Figure (cartoon, each protein chain N blue to C red):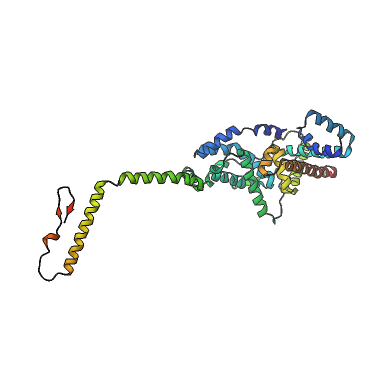
Length: 205
Length: 160
């Protein structure tokens, strides 16, 4: 699985630690490199958490601005990645609280998103198969998006971090400041809930 | 294996992180228990569906837009960031204070010459006070007494 492959790569903490150290010595290029390494993952995480590609770029940038401002206070008590995801999660929670009274909007996966006045096509990597298969896959993706959006934030963050971002139980526990047992039980509940919702969709077709 | 134990392991089974022994036990239970097998099927479908989601990429120029949002002159700003921490501020301020005190001590040493000059200044001030006092009691066109004028001695110190 892709998430498993990422989980292996997530141990590349030495490179991050060296870059962070350079950042703390005011090396701006090192900061640019950190952004380059994590921008897609953070953008993707924020996208999945908010279900709002329109806001995802601003929020991902908020994450890196906060990192930029506070990297001198990073003491290396956790990995940089864990710290980064914690900041990203906090920004998602803040936004969620602000938008609590707003009606959630469901986005179509293949609908173009507006980026700086232009249209930015969403990345749909797997276009193989017959038109029927593509349509079916797209419909399932939309359903998954919708189900994720309906899930509570506590469950959604765990399933996104584990099954999409590829973090380990330990990393998620540190990111969310909760015990590993809590991470496991939330992942169980999130998967079971998503599975039930998807099953009802499959049966309804 | 009981259902309660199997349900506790089915998520790890889907993640493929169980030991070989646990995996065999769970599989044996799933073959016998339709309720747990249904849970397993739902979870497997959920994980597979999540893998279908595309990896969203930020639009080109993400870094350019981000760097425009960062505070101006980041290096200059960063140079002062450590001083925002009280502990670091103390670590920087204390040596600076010691250095300043040392510099003051070198530039303005308390030498014996300085003490003599200080005594001399006091005597001159006393002389001025005497003059002022005499001026206040001045009774006509009488000149000031010569004895009140300080005389320079050979070693640079004045005496009355």
